[in-house]
Image 1 (cartoon, rainbow, N blue to C red):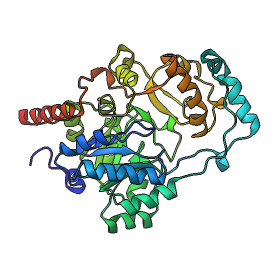
Image 2 (cartoon, rainbow, N blue to C red; image 1 turned 90 degrees about the horizontal axis):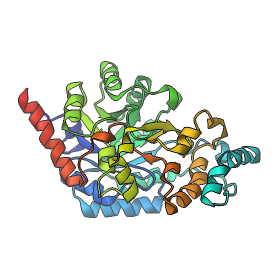
Image 3 (cartoon, rainbow, N blue to C red; image 1 turned 60 degrees about the vertical axis):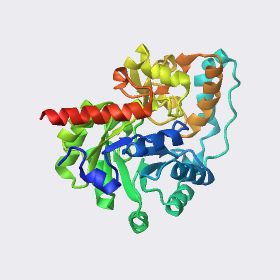
Image 4 (cartoon, helix red, strand yellow; image 1 turned 45 degrees about the vertical axis):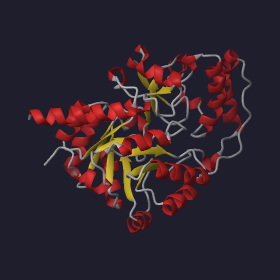
Length: 360
């Protein structure tokens, strides 16, 4: 058996059990998805912020760019706001907390937004209609009848777990594969059974715990950026590895030029978990604002109202190049990144993994 002949590669219909992490918040791109899929891995597109019509358009673009399997990712729970809103008092509290930063960039404090309506059901309809080869989801469980529909339509389903309990819950619903998302990973922590703050197990510990109790194939995610990381994950029983930050840093991703530069900079050594930017816990390169906001989470708005609120500040900060007010998503592994082209990165990962297993 070759190292790449795993249960995951078989189920996903791919040559190599390497998945590109699907980035939400407009960081994914068709170019990145197709590059990874065409190289024999599984490209992924994070679509939770897109309207149903936008998901259809993206799906058609991906289908035109590759005839290989690819993954579209959604968030089962896309709001933490009760009835999609907050009290006027809570909104004023957030305005007061962040006013100094808005003043600093000379941007007016935003007005309270209209209540947010969950889009997940409509997005899910599009998934069932467009039939992407792989549908991954985070922040919760799918109903068993939805999973059954996916099976009938030939859509492979992948759920994300940050704890052993979440993996057990996902297996009970009948998903095809489970991502073990370690706390080293960049971006949001997709915890759904307990608070994200209490669900911070490292990738390789989480992987081993899940392998002990769960029969569903497991994908290791978090802190993996090269062939050595992939080999380590497979050696510990993973059926595949998902790589996020290393692909986010490539020219093909939709990250801004400054975001990519930050991932290759000395600053990338310092990451933090913060709720200050979106209302949900996520890992990025530490910023002055994130430092200032430690222990002030009571003043944040719930997701995604906090994202909407902070987008005004982000826009002003980008225009004025005040990078210390922005959280650039990235994982703890960023300091070892080397490759700026997705195809080169993919080739290097495969070469290193093969070399490692050839030595054994």
